[in-house]
Length: 404
Image: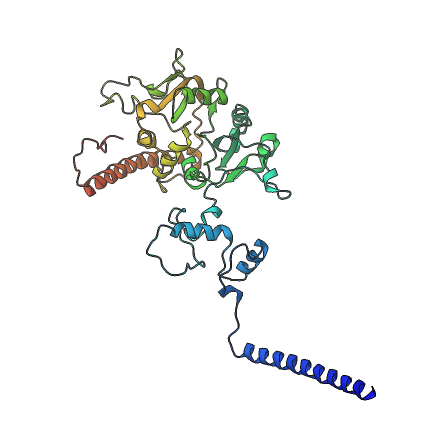
């Protein structure tokens, strides 16, 4: 019995040594294999997108990994799904979507925010809780402090459904804080510039895309007989893409087309002086509003913005060319008679000029207005001529280059 016990103990001891030796050999062999091959990076492994949690994917991507997030992977795959010639693996480190806005082709479409607005945002809380209201219309005034009271009267004619933007040409902004509405208005201050200079630089169509209508008004308008909401209702009712309120016919000089008619809601055509209109459907007898108080639909403004020239700031001649942005222009451009204003003809821009060669400041401003009108006409005519020439359609009956 004693011999049997010693033999059993000895056999168990030898088995234990074999296990230890095998484990040691396995660890050593695995270590040698591991250092014999290049390290395997997770960024080189094509894993299903649901294998790792989204937080981990985001972290890896920030660190420079080529693994795409699920959305960008889908965008890339979608953009390549019709390419039957693509046989190799997809390079997920790049995205190229031609339908994105210019310059954003490398971004996944779902991340592109191509349009914006003037809605004010908080610096705290959740983004989706920021906006208690989203105004559908935009009104801008180009202002100086001397017209502060008049602008206050104008703004009060516009409901909370309007975003208010003030372009300050005299650099004085803080004085407007006495008005409660001014605290939520957008103030843009650049000295001695006109409203078309501001409009070209701060009213890009993608920035104002949330607004159905855009009012681009002067500062010297009397609005006693004007209601903005009713004006919008009439514009919609009569299908106007470009419009203005009627002007008091007995106050100041104006075109026949823009004078208010007491017996109509809206008019779209008139009779100017004999010989002034080669076609009754062309300006200034139709398809015409002035530049002091125009109102544009979103789509019309997108076209007009592109037509505005960077270096021509007064806008003379622009009113004759607005018809190019809607079709048919003589039906979609009109004057709203039942909502009318008074043009007070305050010469604010003249005071922003400089006296030169013995001329008063206002004379220099007026001279440039006339020169810009001629330049604008010439550019439009030449651009249209060159375009038709490129199509080899010279003399086309559709060309209206000589009359803008």
